[in-house]
Image 1: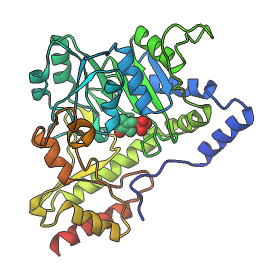
Image 2: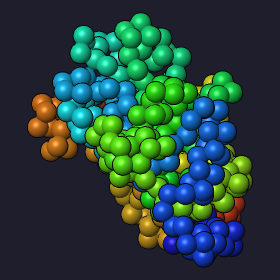
Image 3: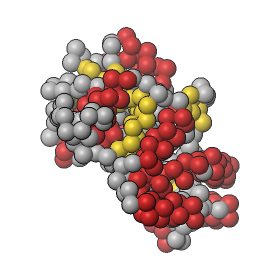
Image 4: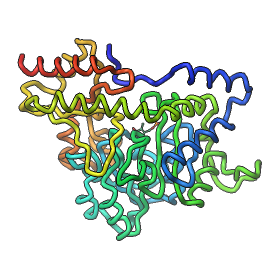
Length: 368
Ligand SMILES: *Cc1c(COP(=O)(O)O)cnc(C)c1O
């Protein structure tokens, strides 16, 4: 099976973890600090703060932005649930806005109609590894005095207008989960240029303590820390970030070359002024293809090709959010795309031959 995702664990990663094991300092320590410095440098942000996972990074960001009882936060339904849940953890209200078909990210034209006097923030998602339409969203945020939390969980190293993901908001959040482009098993990172947000996030990560003064509890806090065992993996992979991105981008452009001529297949679009890091290479299988997305997926799997549907159902159609009053028809673009999307393997272990083989299979199946 050609895997849809596989973490980059080579000699360097293994040795680095062994070094941490031998050091005896296996919780948060110098490796975590090293990884934080690497993220701050890559993202061009003043602060990068490591977390136990992407969800806890987002939660800490939501908390540091001061979201609380009844505050409304605008986000998209076409994402992973961890984009939205942290708002609920702080007793805020999740207000969905549909996505655009071209980049799978928040549609700036649909935001303003959802802004009320309780709206406090927007959480756009850099879905599949491409930064959302920042300029348009920022303009709306500024006009209504809203904060932006960029869910950059899938977009380490992606850029727009020369700036890097994690810097397109008051706070950015990354995931280092096993399937992500930088994968430490579990792990997360929060980025910000704001000293007060950074201070709040660090305290929240560490039981409400200021890092310099232990056993003085200044606020409510969690244990949301990363371990140096995980950070060691991240440090070694971050040294290889260019290779990780370049192989993904190379595989993506081979796919686009081979697939875009197939009737009914829509290949992903790289928006102007963006570089895409292709956490997922996601095609759309439309009616003109002659077979359904699910039929194609079954066929590819029979041919030992790993593929996945991200996401099979938008958040608002799940029981958890239906209870808040959302229903079928509320977000037509998300609903349509959830039936069409199919992600093909682009990870660094996927070879040119693999991509050619997969393209052939997609062609072959359309003719059957
Ligand atoms: C992976 C992911 C998260 C959550 O990250 P975890 O590390 O799994 O907690 C949040 N948002 C998006 C868009 C993600 O892809």
